[in-house]
Image (cartoon, rainbow, N blue to C red):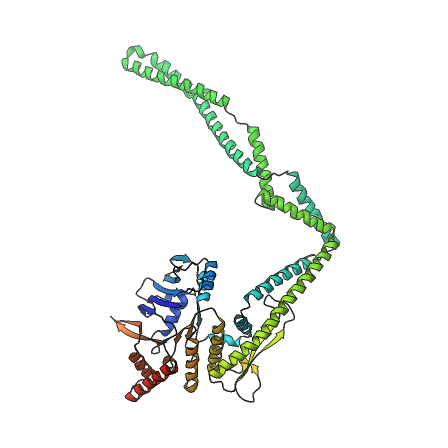
Length: 555
């Protein structure tokens, strides 16, 4: 269940924290007080699109955090499959919205928004005030049935069979070649196979060659540098050794005339000796060095040959050889093309039969489960003041296979005596759609593993006796699920196990929204406001008190 919501710097909310309870949690307040911001903040924390405009004008960021607590082992296993590991059953989902970016976290670990949405789909179901419009789309009707019947495993088997069927169909279509095309492809394949064979590749050869190339290329650079140094210091026409020797002789020729010159001549003589020793050592190193220009050229040439093949057939010798095997298999197919086509036709026929079997099995299950769904939704609709309602689900068979089977299904309804059943989108009004969606949601909830359901003004367009019946249905659902409902109807608010008030105030020249838990007496005052509007009289308060007492008795 959802334990708490923490919001900071979001739209009109400066900072607010809400601790939700089991059962029916009601949120009410004046129009514009910020009720929609609460649902919007939850959606943001659950990975939905976040707008930077939601950040308060005087803040650098907005922050939303949801804390869930789950002990059900099957749900915890599903979370682990998503690499989410609850800590003592606790899952903390948070989002920080900053200019130009947002940061999503689950249990303090940064995650993607898509993972947030995947985790949210296991924990919470948010039904917005416009979501009932999805009932008007026929493509959603089959999804509702599949959710009710829990057909995930059956659909997974069908998808696997369908993908196999699609692949066999593709291969068979690609196998429609005339003799000229076959000969042309065969010739090209044989050229490529010969090119690979003539290279006499060995696995691991490229790595060994690259290692040798690096060693040899460094050796070559060393030899070039050492050779240049030898030329400059002792082997060229004008080198350092000969020039220093000449300089020594010049100084010695005049050293008898000046002791300082004698000292300088001695120093330069030592340099001359050191340079001569250096040249002998360098010459010996060059003579002993093991570098073969020819060997370097051979290694470079072989590497070029292998890299050329890599550019055509794969980035490793293993992949090149695997490509060769694939091409040889294709050559075998082309040389025995008629047998190959016959084999594909047999495989396609078998795949078609399998996808048909899986589609038929799923269709039978759906039609059986649809009867149960229709029966339960019909009863739920009666509970919601559709007294003469008839509800049905009708099936048609597609003329082609899909990954979702061969069924095309649609809800039909009649809300008045004597009227024939018609497609849902042709009959229901806005208020009726809200109740139909609520009926469907409550039926699905009984079969759903999601514990927390959120309804955002799903009661729009209803009043009076119908509102009372909607309240009772919501309260009934709250016995087995945590319900969080934003409402403007006192009949629904009276049923609250926990009642929250969202109100707008002015603080320091700024408008802010706050949310707080109401006591029993405060809840009665809020019901009176919802009943009486601007002027709340003692009579209105008494009516609110009676409404609350009746709701408590109904619990």
